[in-house]
Image 1 (cartoon, helix red, strand yellow):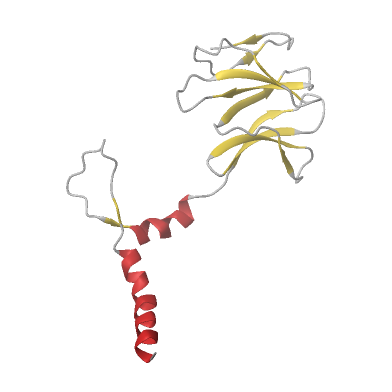
Image 2: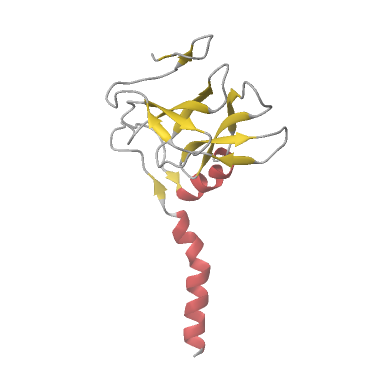
Length: 161
């Protein structure tokens, strides 16, 4: 029995040493010369300082004192509504791919337009989000790349680039 307990203690104490032997290797698409191996423990330690959640302002509500922000949960950025200064955010979009570029019309706040990619293909499409019921409508053709939409001053037309 004592031998069994000693073996368990040895395995528990040796486990961190095995974890430190893991090495981070570059992607096969990269040619790396003269760079020493990167221990997995170093990558994990640095991750505490490089993996953080930020928020970026997307649009001001033209009527109410509210804003749309983009922030990342898990692996993708989504659009959130903040109804007052210092208020809690409410997530509005829930997609496996990142959502960006949300913007209200300069004169109406019943909906906003946002851009979304599918599967990393960078063929961004523009969508309209109806705030009353959460319905999302595709505005572009679904094939071409559409970025940085611009509203007309009257707020009745949208220019896609």
